[in-house]
Amino acid sequence: MDIFLDKKSKISIYRQFCDQLRSAVVEGRIKTGMQLPSTRMMKSELGISRGTVRNVYDQLISEGYLETKSGKGTFVALKNDSQTSINDKQESTLSEFDLSTRAERLFHIFYHPNIRRIRAFMPGTPELREFPFQKWHKVSKSVVHANSDALDYSDPLGYLPLRQAICEHIHLSRGIVCHPQQIVICNGGEEALRLISTLLLDPGDPVWVEDPCFVGRRLVFKSVEAESIPVKIDDRGFIVSKALKQNPKAKLAYVVPSRNYPLGIRMSLSRRIELSEWAQQYGGWIIEDDFDCEFRYEGNPVTPIHSIQQSNRVIYMSSFTTTLLPAFRLAFMVLPKPLLDSMSRLLSLGKPTSGLTQSVLAEFIKQGFYASHIRRMRKLYDKRRKYLLEVIDRKLFESIYATDAGFNVLVQLPKQINAAKLSRYLLTKHDIVAYSLAEYYMNKRISPAHRNTLVLGFACLNKTEIEQSVETLNSVLANWNSVQPH
Image (cartoon, rainbow, N blue to C red):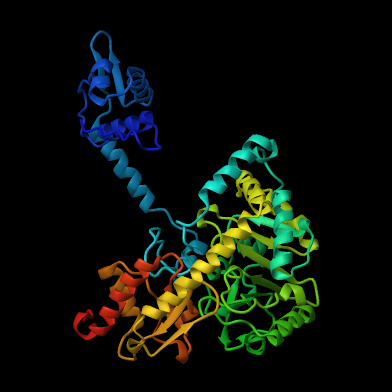
């Protein structure tokens, strides 16, 4: 009987032993009728307490996997062949389940694979190793000991001290004037967008979406069955006149004025005003996503549409995913006051955002740790961006485009090298993530100026990692004729 217990694991010894013993019975590695070692013998063999062994035996007896025989001991009760047939029947039944039509449509959209392990050149991923864990832990302990409200359910719209802290922060950093009550805390950027879409969109409603765009955001509109209308980006950003020609009856516009991702282009002031006037004239809504706003390395960020709007039709949203840690899954919105009651009722259907995390973050911002962390990381990312541009062999590329903000640069390949094919080769052969820019375009309708381009992230890589990864990239490009798959 192969039982391996990891005493350093976060999973309890009881749970490890119980799960492994149950699996051994179900899979037939312990045959029906076989007698198990006594609790005393099992204790000695595994090096755990006799009480733990007894509790596991009792649990599996109650579940029907084991049985006791008076005066003889504990035996395997389950018939493995019958259990196998049950499993086969369940699997057969599961395979016959039909997904909803909505789910089938949703899965047709392209999305990047869920690559959890950090590696070069993952875009949009912050440096996790530089997070001030000790400061966060210190604040967390103080909040737990001093604030009982942090341990209870919070307001559906969010923990008020955090909303106050965010309100002050975005006023100082982005010039946004609002009331703390207008701040809504939610579980990540996609969740914020899904909540807004649930309130404002019906299936089939047309939505203007920047093209190219962060794929996860587009997926949200797909999931609520809105009709996404791709609107091209030029050197002045979102082309409002083209959007009006494509579909003048759009109910909502999704834009990232401060820095289109992944192109890095800022929307001009005239375009921001033009979009605001459209919302006022046609009764449309603008979702202004500002998730990259904190990391600008040159110049000042553009004035948000929220600050120049002529009507109360702009919903500003941003996230702590890149400024802190992705695992926090915290984002926020600034909602027009007429939407607050409806949003509160919608959020009351579930409580997805940790009140404790909100409480700690509120204190983290209040004590100045957040602003300090942003300043330090901005300097670090700027150094990494410059170093990436320094070590790339420019002779191997048609052009290199480094924006003045964000976490990525764009490199255009020679015409004879296919970006999609090179991207697949780098991932499978060298464990390097370098997405083709075409993946960010709807229907792959990429503009000629951006064809054959890779998106390279740099924020999550230290100097040595950048150097090693670029060396591999340079080597593959220099020898592409001999290494490319046929």
